[in-house]
Image 1 (tube, one colour):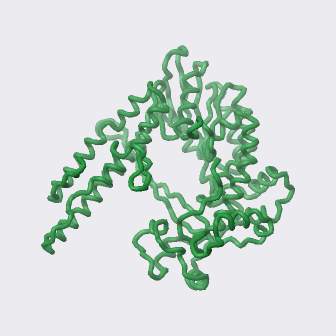
Image 2 (cartoon, rainbow, N blue to C red):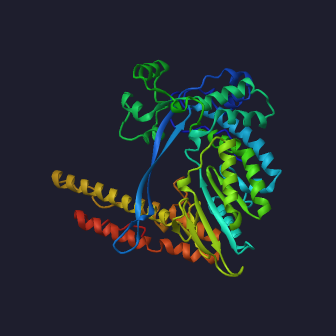
Image 3 (cartoon, rainbow, N blue to C red):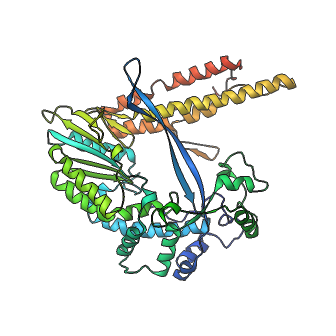
Length: 497
């Protein structure tokens, strides 16, 4: 298990730990968080908030193209992220580790429970690594392939706005049970209040008001060499309070629901919140020779087809009654699988809550299983190719700008498409982990595809690798197309090539 104590590099309201004061080191943090009196009176700073925007394209049965194929629907998913000030983050991380160790003891006492709860946990695969989503998907598909029944159903449930709807009373009771406390101790309650009733500041509102701060990109918050966003606490008060930037989290829920995503403790609290329900749901699926898997708010159930309606009803009742959460019926997928003998491939018919057919495969954690073959989801492959083309398009635009500058100033600067970054981030040339000039490059999406093929096994490796077999041709064609479009010169060959 990784050490909870990590000095984070981002900038926040106060200086980074170890940045201005030699006392604010790992030793200082460890001493501080292990003193319950410190935690009982600790004043937590506001969180900083930004949004991750995810552009999604999904097959939509209601959109039929002239060719007869099913069209795609465009959707934007906005995920709000909140991150804590440095010492606050260390306290949250300390408590996350404390809670996680207790949860781990419970999981280890029941192997079925441990196998069922797979999100936000370090589950060892072998001596070299922990399991990842590839392993979890493979286990589910192997369970389906090896099932003895000839008629089974796979159900995928999704919880509406999971983190935003975690009930504070339910979470508080779960916290107390875990540590055998009728009432939370002063230090525990101080941390509980900090994560359930926080204040936050929106970065998009704050950055333009900061003097001498480059406002072009919020990414500079992570890359800046500055120690903190503010020079002093007086400056913080002046800017934040005079401009009324302070917001209270969960205002629409009357402060009774929701915890912010992004803090070091958010993920482990979601598992704590679900603990008793995980145990009860497992009691339903196990006698049916079924399967239960929960990855955060994504729930997968496998059971005999003649039991599927009863299982869905019972599981929904547990989640809605015990946890005060709501299942999104429009996102519920029921896949009915049939075959004549255990050696045959499955025939799959996947339907939505309205009974409309949505496909002939099962999607789980970024993979698809059609009854015999495992592949990466087409939406994931499409996203990779969109990113690849966007990267080339951006570099071509910068090259065009430089070309125009060269013509105006009569100075010759590099005005071609810089390919090295594209090759490293988007192609097989950068797929291998390597260390260059002290920097570690961890690979790219092609690395993920190759690893997926390896983990899924020889039977599926070829079909997975074939999904990106044309990536190099697409890179070459896109670069050539933009060179012709903007009249750009060819990039000079590297001396090492």
